[in-house]
Length: 518
Image 1 (cartoon, one colour):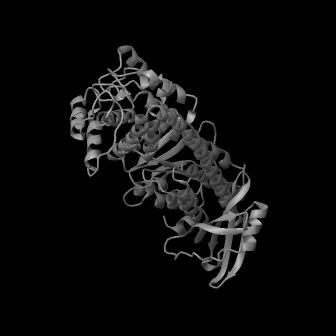
Image 2 (cartoon, rainbow, N blue to C red):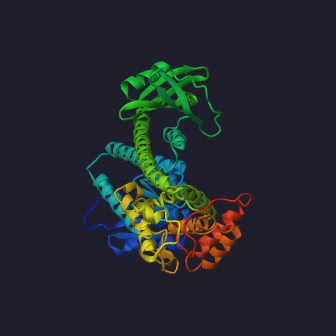
Image 3 (cartoon, helix red, strand yellow):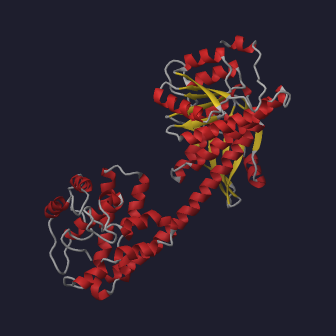
């Protein structure tokens, strides 16, 4: 059906009763996903579910039957999900559409919401969450489509409001999931602002309260539009935004024609630290109040995210420095511990990179490796600093440092993951380690990595009670004890990290396989 046919067609709004079963069309070129969704919908007995293998089949089904809801994949051959969404809006805008994709992006999500999708779901998804959303949207639809409840104008106004709420909800969720650094957050915020507003140029301007000046932190433009790094943002407008702590729209005369500016404050603890500014002048188009409301929502959510990140990073840094001071107090007693902690951290980070650990895991390892011997603060000097080999009783006391380290970090919720790594860094692959006798994959991977780095450093370091091994000798020992004391895969990755940096000898940590590091 083309646009003119759709325009001439009267949209069908069915009156509902409690006995009506809702009709749902599931469109996906993957038979397994399609069948999973259809079977889940049919199980409750509340829905009549029909399936289509692609956009073409879906349009044929829509031309012969009225559906309450369409669930469609986006990436399909021929008519894709976005094209299908547009055609459904032409055929009957009363049909709700949920789009699903395995390849989400900011632009795609915003475009789907603007075109009229009620929701945008990312694969893999939980089927119970999809069923929940289906239930919610069909309940909303029943309220909207009861005959005589709302006239057509009121329905369209309500749909517009629902779309605005959906767009704001997407912004909130997207900002909430941001895991990038503070500097990159500005880039992501600017990119999202351009997409949801239809602006051409965006700048995030930082405000200096002492000088009253505005300095660009990030500038960007939409695709195929040359960057406008020297946009003449009116200082009067910027200062008014700071004073009122509220967003503003402003139309100006530009050498290229009429232009429209939208500004929203970025705040931390109710103090303006910057302004999110947007500019466009295509065909004299202006930003609308709706654009302003959406950008204000984005600015508020972004400000909250930044404030939380700053507070979290400050708290995390302060706590980390406190524990580093504790490690320093151990180092004042035992100089070996100082070099050892630094060396283990260097070794284990390189191993993590070889094993392609996530950035979050690598940051976690940096803390855990630096603090892995923090429990030794409770070990008496006559044992910790003993120049001779330990007795059985002394060795048992040394072994308590893992559990003590765990206890020291337990009150700090931010270090929940790190304390578990520290607790288990002396567990052995075959279950003969301590403190809990874990074996194999029961031992956290990051603990296994520290264990290998710890042992290598101990073996290659001179101690009062024994001479150091050469790097080759230590590697031989690691291989010999792989599968008993150490995870063999971690041993291979560790040795690989040494070979990739073999131009210089690097320090090491923990005890040799045959003895306990102190």
